[in-house]
Image 1 (cartoon, rainbow, N blue to C red):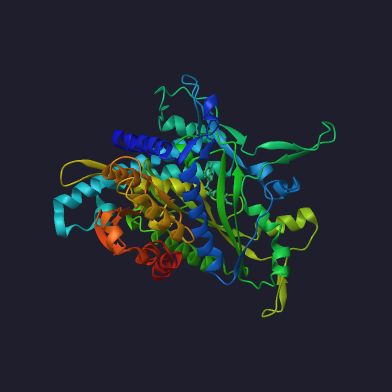
Image 2 (spheres, helix red, strand yellow):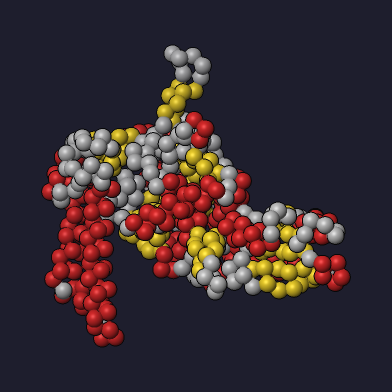
Length: 517
Ligand code: GAP
C-alpha cells in the first residue's frame, strides 16, 4: 500500500515537472479537483481523443459525430432523471469532518475481502503447484468461501438499499461492518444523505427573470436530443451510432486521486441506436470492441478487467465497467451501458416530439434502444500516464526514469539534437525539423550534454532522439535512438520520415485493434 501511494505521488510530481498536468489556479493555492493541462499534457490529451475518435467514427461506417453545447434547456435534466436521481449518498465523519460517499466506503470494504480471498488463492497455488485447481479451491476452501460470500452479501444488500433509497440501511451496514474513517480511524458517523451532483448556473442578466440552468453532467444528453436531427440529415438507418467528446461537470463529494475524479472533466461517449430486443447482442459486441481498443495500446491485458454492476443506474438494464489497474488499484475507466429506450422515451414525453425510427424491414416505427460506451478522457490520460512511468535500472546500475507512452500518443514524436552547438550541426538539425514538421510534432534541443538530453526526453516520453554529429556533414546520416530499448542506429536523413511513421501511424494501431477483435 505504501508502495502504491509512493508510486502515485511520483506520478503527480512527474506530471507537473514535465509539463503534463498542474492544479488549476495554482498561484491562488489551486481549486480543489480542478486541473489544467500544460504543453505536453494538452498534446497527449488531444492524441488520446483523436485515437478514440478515429476508432469510433472513422472506423465505423454507421457512426457519426456531433459537438453539442454544454448548456442545454433545463427540461433536458428533468427528462433524463438527473434532477431527481443524480445523487450520491454521502456520509460525514464527525471527528475528522471528512465527507465520504457511503457506497464507496462499502465498496472499499468489499474490495478488501476480495483481496484477502485472492491472497489465499495465490498462497495455495504456490503450495500445490501444477496440480492446483483454482475453481475447486474457491468453492471448497472455507476461508476463501467465507470472504467471497461475505463480499457478495455486502454488495447485494447495498445495491438493494440504494435502489430502494433506504439510506438508513446503508448507514446500518456501515455500522455493522464497523467501517472506520481512513483519516480519524473512528466510527463516529452522521446519517447518510443524498446530494445532487449538478452545478447550477443562470441564463440572463435580470435576477428575477433569469432561467436556472445546469452545466451538463454528461455529454450523452446532447446526443439524445439530437437523435432525430442526425438520423434525418445523415440519413442514418438503425443500427447506427452518434459519438461526441466534450466537457462535463459534477460537484463530486469525494474529489481526490488527482485527475481520476474531477469536478470539471471531459467525456468521450457514443450512443448506439438499435432495435428493441437486440440490446444484449449489441451490449456484448460493444464490450468486446471497447476492450479491443484498450488492448491495442499495449498496456497489458492483465491491467484490465470487466466489472458487472450490481446496482444499476435509473436508465440501465445491464451495465459493466472496464476497470484499469491504476496505482491505487483496479478502478472504473469506462462504462458500457444498455440504456434501453429510457432517454428517448422520456424526451418524447417531456418535449411532446416523436423520437422514433421507421424501420422499413419491419414496416413499423419504434423508439430505438441504446447501448452507450462512455469513457473519461482525463481518466484514460491517468491510466496511460501512470502505466507508462517507470524507473529502470540499467546495466551500469544507474537508474533512468522513463515514460513509455504508446508511441502513437506521445506529445513529441522526435527530438532533434545537434551534438555540439557549432560546425553547422544546429543548421542541419533545424533543416531536419523543417522537413519533419509537416507530419510530426518534433522539437529541437541543444542544451546540456547529449546523455542528459536523452534522459530528459526519456522522462518526457519522446519515442525517438535524432542526433546530428560530425559524420552527418560527410554522409548525410544521423543516429536515431529508440526510447524503450535505448538502441541506436545510423540511418540516412531521408529515411527518418518513414522510420518514425511506422511507429506512430494511427492506421497500424487501428489494425492491431481489429486483430484483437
Ligand atoms: N453517460 C454515462 C455516464 O456519464 P458515468 O459512469 O457517470 O456514465 C462515464 O461516467 C465515465 O466518465 C466514467 O467511466 C469515467 O471514466 C468518467 N468520469 C465520470 N465522473 C468523472 C469525474 N468526476 N472525473 C473524471 N472522470 C469521470
